[in-house]
Structures are given as C-alpha cells and as structure tokens.
Image (cartoon, rainbow, N blue to C red):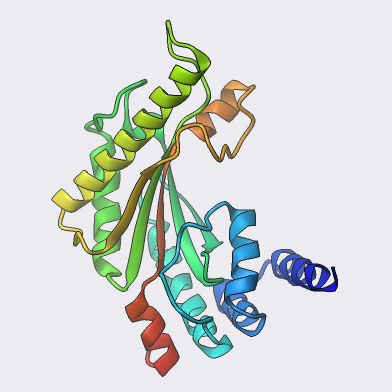
Length: 231
C-alpha cells in the first residue's frame, strides 16, 4: 500500500509540475524506471509503446533522452494537421505523440488516404527520417458508431478492421516516402478501444476517430544516452 502511495505521489508530482521532457526524464530515471514508467504509461494509455529493454534506464540517461525528445517535439510542431504532445513510454522515458483526426486522412468509413492528407504525411515522413534514432508505432482508432445492418459485435469487429486498415495505410504511405521499414516497429488497429473523448457526443466521436503516431527512444538512442553521447 505504501509503495502505491509513493508511486502515485511521484506521478502526481510530475504531472502537476508541468515540467519539460528533460525534467521528466530525470525524475523518471531516478524514480525506478520501468515500474514507475508502467504506471505513467497506463495513465497515458500507451504501455505498448517502448523499446524492449532488459533493465531500467538510469536518471542521467533518462534526462538526456528527455532533452532530445524535447527537440523532436519542437520539430513535430511543424507537421500540418497534427496534434503534438509529449507522453511517456512503457519504459518511463519521454516520447512524442502525433495525432491525426481520421476525417483529415480518410473519407467516412474508408481506409484510402485522401489527396489532401498526403502533404501532412509527407512532412511527417521527413520528421521521421530526420530522427532515425526514434522508433515508431502507428495506431488506428474509431468511435463506437454501429454499422448499418450489423449487430453490436459485428460493428465492433468492422471498426477494429477499419482502424487496422487505416493504420496500415498510413504506414504504407510513410514507407513509400522513404521512412525505413525497420523504424516502424508496430502498426496496430484498436477499433473502439481507448477512447480519448465521450462517444455520446458528436465532438467526442470526432476525437476518437484518429490515427496516432508515436516516436519513442529506440535501443540505439538508449545506448547513446547511457554512454553520455546523445545530443
């Protein structure tokens, strides 16, 4: 019980401080790495994102990764039609999430990218190619609207399939634009799961129809940070 209180207190302190990724990386590295990172990851809804590392990253390396990801986040702000935010990965390390409203990328119920979406993804591809030390995960989501002439179970499956197809369409476009295949570590559709807003409202459903692109520390970045050479 005491451990839970300590962990939650640390999480609250980090959130309330409103600190940048440099401070966040230091706090998490000092706070126990993987354990604290898993807690924060669950809060952020992205525990599946993160390099498969064997041990917790130390405070110094975490701080360097935080500082580096601050630079990546600043660069990501230039990507058209993307909502950019700093998040924490499953290892307790700073990461960057770009969120695209599915309405910007796709026509309703479709998984073919619109012509207008390709400019934004072209900018995103340049961002990824500039930061090849970042691993990438691409995730698709839908609202919970039912499909015509379908049961609730059938609708959920169709939404899951659509989210996977949309995530894959974004991945395919980024690969076509020269992003290394080895950089994109996961392409996953989650359908109606993990809503970020209230599905009972039109505005909430619009927010839930989205594609998220995560940029997080790959093993090479972690190694460089541990050696003190990451800039």
